Image 1 (cartoon, rainbow, N blue to C red):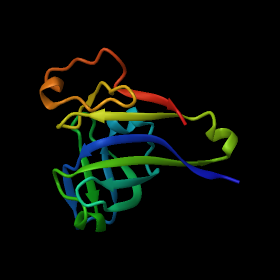
Image 2 (cartoon, rainbow, N blue to C red):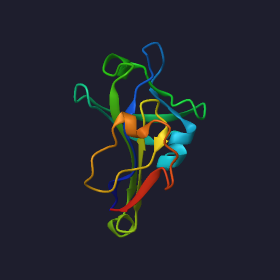
Image 3 (tube, rainbow, N blue to C red):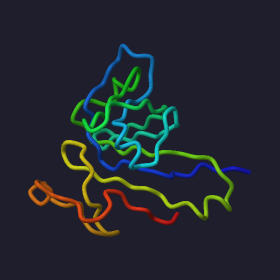
Image 4 (cartoon, rainbow, N blue to C red):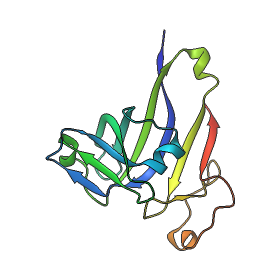
Length: 145
């Protein structure tokens, strides 16, 4: 039997666009996708910090490095530019496979650029602490599920 496992997460990225006139999906900066271990057409869960909306859709790679997070189609009514969202990649696997997963969590700044992740239990860095930040550790964290 397979179970759904969150294998990667983009934590509190900002929505940069919402296109109602599109057939559906979410466009994500391809560099952010890579950092979180997301694949094109992979199913993701999108949760809004602004209104608690939850949406499931598939990923379309966006241009690298621009920080694009664009909700396409129906979710454009629920998610608006500037909203912070959590995007979680889901994979189905056996419990035995899930026990070996190293989840990738990516934290970003206000422009959706990856930043050093806080240690477990620590608060996210303040804006002034992130400006001009040069990461000395990987921009994502691997945690054991």
